Image: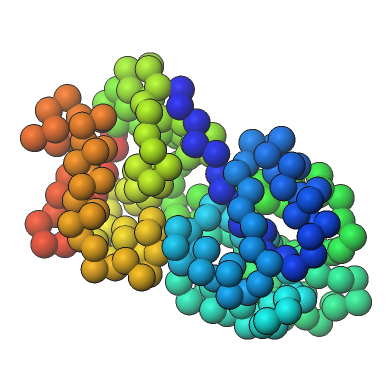
Length: 230
């Protein structure tokens, strides 16, 4: 099967954090992304939403809690807070503002990876999506990020996978053009409906027996798309 590594954005201004956390994330099967300021981190989230965010509260350009508030305005994925041991009230405030969990500095990377796994499982549960989605001979494993058709791997680009995963996690509900564009391409691209149509066409070519008469990735005219699982 073709695996698509979950993308983890680490927003922290300490180079040593990135030096040891980046390789650790790679070894655990993730694709690490790096930002050293709140502005760069928010831009990275908006450009293409990662699967999870690790956010330091002590950033040079913006208070970490304010960065969290801004991120939560358009990002629904897991956010793990990094904080110093003497910032108890700030950790509580961050959880109240929408963080999923926190890890105290200095931390063991194993603990952070475990908390990431839990937060990402909880995110799937919130969406009401099962870990394994089947539609005919198509299987989509949202935890392992694997897609197969008739037992053979389906080769998808990262954007194609993100779009398919968002549709499949929808539980058969119609997702609007705006919802899909925001989730996969970021809020700056909510008007690029033609771009979305192109990628839906790519998915149909790879998943449908008859792309001209799709069975799984179904158009709701003037509204958006839905994924028809078993």
